[in-house]
Length: 443
Image (cartoon, rainbow, N blue to C red; front, side, top):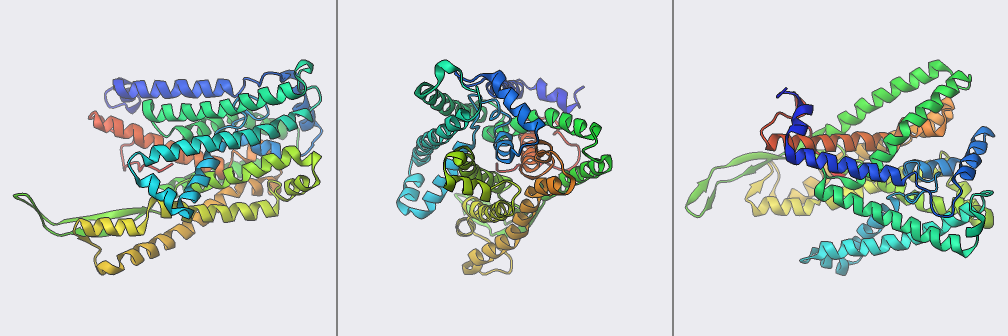
């Protein structure tokens, strides 16, 4: 059994503890996703959504928000906002660091990252309060959803406090997974929410086929396309371009270190799945506000109609945001000026490129790589809309067969496997794969 990777994973005590701790945190997350807010009548809520589904009423925005909350939005659970407010605030802070040099300088000082993280937490509370108020308005429009004794300001206060606390608790769970688990906590929470919805989605798909609403040939074609897309996503996320770097001989103390030839690995999509998560998070905020306040305001109703998921304006804006964040995050995580400076300080050079032209060369390479990589991400992200419009698939099924869900599942899975493989090799065990090497992703 020594050569069995699954056996080796649980044989290493440290890795076994990390895996069990991570699984425990994910179980807590899923339990919270079905625990309703105080004052909510769960049976009335369930009956409302069943009637909406049976009558064929459009619930595009609701399905969209429920997808990113891992099914917690329709349950009106304590985690119904999910982790998206934290991600939205993280994006805002990244933009502020670029706009305000003073804030950027503070982040680079000793303890600066902790200060920035504290600001992100405070900002997340503000975003949660705004979104949680929209939730209370949305619940008030559902017949008998709120228990009579909780009607009025009582429910508003309790719901806002509960939902805000739930999101902050999810932040804490993500940090605990990073420190005591296998890492990548925030992405794992999103991953767990997506995976938890798969059984229900395929159950709906089976019912649609049996009722004759879906052609089995189209379903088989869509499933084959789904498998093919997974293979393309894995190939794209593992692909990279190697830029050679030569280092001259160095004298350190009394030792002479010989010349070294190495390379800078630049992935086809250096930012991974981050652009898709960022774009989805940015659009989720106005969508939730517009969807919940649309009935009481003509302006918000127009915004909700304009940003309707699967609509042309939404898809165009979604694509542009993915391309923008692909470039933005690549510049943040792989700054050509910083890379060139480190190469020069260590006595390195890129063959055929002058030292003063190194930044321009690296920028040119990154721009050439990021453009097709970002367009590929955007194409994958638009697949659910194509499946819905061409094959008439239910939304909850289509969202799982492509787009953000597929990119997150593949990206997080590859990253988690690479981290587990690193632990195994550190304890002198074989990796998870016999051939090749898993490359970690920055999620």
